[in-house]
Amino acid sequence: MNSLTLERKNISDRFTEKEKTKRIIKWIRRSDSKLRKRFSFLKYQNAIGFGITMGSAFGMILLGSLYVMDIIPFWACIIGNGILASFLHEMEHDLIHSIYFKENPKVQNFLFWMVWLFRANTVNPWFRKEIHLLHHKLSGNIEDIEERFISNGMPWGFRRILVMIDPIMAVVLQGPKIRKDAIRYLAKIKAKPIKGPYRLVYLLLWYSFLIWGMISLINWTLGNPIQETGTVANIHNFLNTAAVVYLIPCWLRQSAIQIVSSNMHYYGDVKSLYQQTQVLDSWWILPLHLFCFNFGATHGIHHFVVTQPFYLRQAVAPKVKPFLKKYGIRFNDFESMTRANRYQKEEMDGIAIPA
Image 1 (tube, helix red, strand yellow):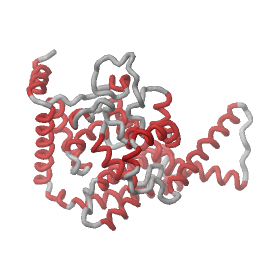
Image 2: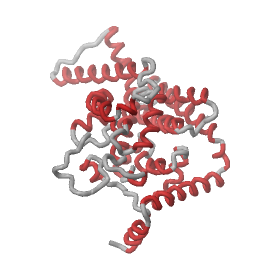
Image 3: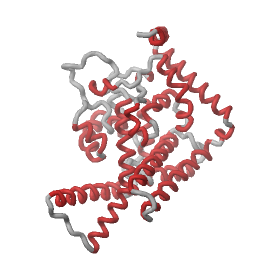
Image 4: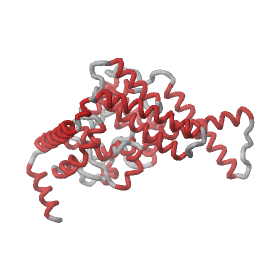
């Protein structure tokens, strides 16, 4: 163990978790303040948020149009729209915390519609707002509806993988348990989980694309490819185009953030804000981070200071992350996956782990 590691360990052990939390929050706010003073345009926070939303939505339309016109390849459209959809997710998250247009609910609702319709495979943002704010109050606890629905706290295995990547399996496998464990909090949620047909339409198109593609692949493998003509061929072409332009990018983004988020949050034995998250910034997570805006490396900062726009969180991260490490926040604790995201590192053998 080198001297720098020993120094960090001594600094971390010198303070209580509450004291370390206060110091971390102070450092994040200080870094944020310095950046705002240096770049005066950051004071136009509402305009920046509005511009990111509209620019990302327009960008998705543009890339989709370029693909339809055979100007760009399918993979460029999928990757590009997946990245742009991740910007919209970050905007939704900031809007949930009223970081933009706090005094203008009409504009907030308009932006909620924009960020949702361009990623309609998610629950509507009005419902998510309530469960996300609850997440900050109860992060790591059995009543944390939002994180448990994306597999946080589940033992690693095939069931957990299904929950992380498939919305129907998340409801089927986790829904009954969450309803039982968090019934009193669910009863207080005013927003309805279903708002309009938009998510249903997405899921109908998504599963139609998957099933049709699977049937076609099986028949092709067996040497008996399906001959599609007329209306059938047109419908299949539409599904394939929708998949490239919208369905796959949204699924990629959602799967990426759910894999990262469910594993960077601790669960079950969390006793304080200090223990709620770790930092995941290993190089091999980069493909996932591409579609969730570097979430695992920076989301822990958000737990300490929730009022910071996502782009500023990214900007201060290089200065904040060494400070987090200095005060004992864990980095790349991949072993937590083997203990169902528990914070404590003692042996879990023989201990029942509820999901």
